[in-house]
Length: 297
Ligand SMILES: [Fe+2]
Image (cartoon, rainbow, N blue to C red; front, side):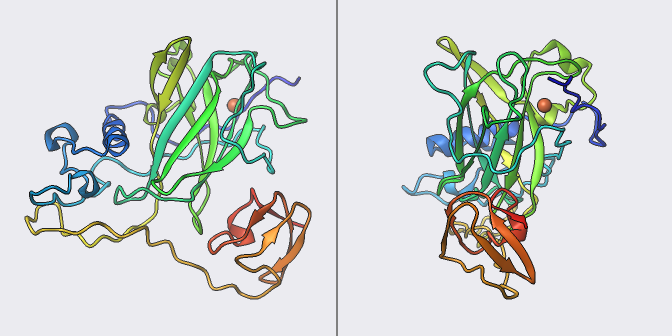
């Protein structure tokens, strides 16, 4: 295969610094466990949704902008392929490599989880090779109602010029695509890879013969809440969902609610598109918004 060089586009992201990227795993753990997190651990008030419903005054929902900026974008590299299969597991019984499960949530700017976010993962195999003819170690999935995703895969192999990483595209319904990469702590090449960004480090642990990684994405999506500012002591209510706007279809044969099969052609906004994979259309998944589902053609 060609020598992989997806490090050939240098990133403009910040170099490793002292940014605090340890809070998201705490948020994630709180969401997963459904328990309150001491504010002292977070540096901000706990999420309203993590407060037990039994008595007590609800803590206000924090803002995510106090050092937790949106997840930084990274270069796509040369090996992305559209039309990946929809699946959360990229392995089977015969797959070679150290098993890895990656879990996490997708949040908006107000730390509220977002459901139905498209995550399209791709990575090298155990030998550091990308499957550019098929779809091995490629797959997309959607966050569940709680904003959570789970990826079953292997620890990707190393290839020349890069540290260990997993590529991903993340897109909320109706939102822009965030293309980025996830990294592994303790990798020697993290110190020499010019694309590597510590804000994209997963939290890792060993489980049996495999590994588990955790990472929460924060998308640059405004969210409204019914809560007051964090400094207030006013009793709050549960936050509302993300305020993603539904685009009014500008005309065409595409229609929400329609089940489409791969190869189906539609028009939208005066442009023709070909369906990349079977799905049932919904508001926010208009063809221009979801390149994993539609390509111009
Ligand atoms: Fe890569």
